[in-house]
Length: 128
Image (cartoon, rainbow, N blue to C red; front, side, top):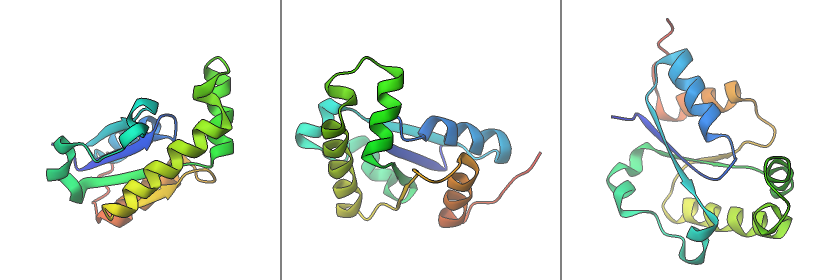
């Protein structure tokens, strides 16, 4: 059973953060990405509602997200600054509606993001 469930729009850092938490501290982490298709009527999935106390959101600046997406995928709607702004605005509003803690990862390393998550959830740092 996951101790933390990371939520984000695609490419805000959930996978590297999950791996770091697991490999460095043996913290079990699950990921849930919100896709562009989710943005039409963004809701917290029913499957996640029982775990609201384990949810943590990751965001990023729209400019940085657009740059990352342009590097990895063809230019188009998915990587456009406009699309990134829409997705981030929607997901941050969802986090606020459900009182889900979240962090803008733009200026933080994976180590700093992980430390913040450990602090917020009061998790033990199990070092191997």
